[in-house]
Amino acid sequence: MNSDIQQFKSEFFKALAHPMRIRILELLSEGEKNVNEMQAILGSEGSAVSQQLAVLRAKNVVNSVKEGTSVIYSLRDPLIKDLLAVAKQIFDNHLVNAISLLEEIRSE
Image 1 (cartoon, rainbow, N blue to C red):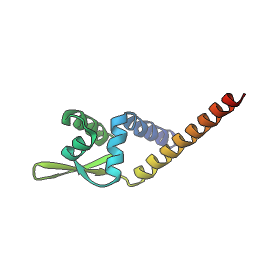
Image 2: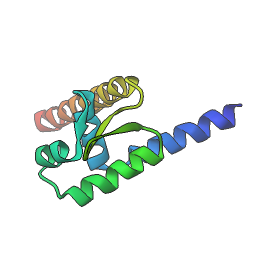
Image 3: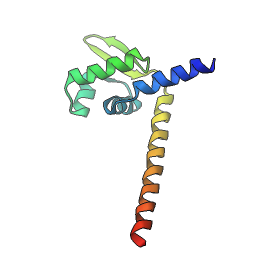
Image 4: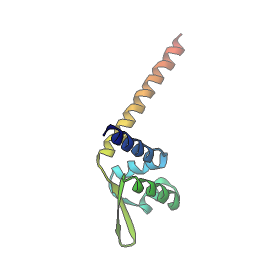
């Protein structure tokens, strides 16, 4: 059972292991979006956005629903928003520690 959970976590984090996929998830944390909306916000080509969305879909991280000629994407699990917030807090903690260390070095 533990190995199943570890395997799931490993695959889940692999799905997150790209800066554009993280940014896409941050956008979807704000609400549903289609590819054109994400492309405009990211300032990236549609093919690059679509490629990353395909990875997120394959790993069951996002949902997609076709509406007319558009595909609307959303987070599969709203807890992803919390995970991204925790990751930012961890980054902030590392940044605070680095700044403290730099200040300590400068004062010597």
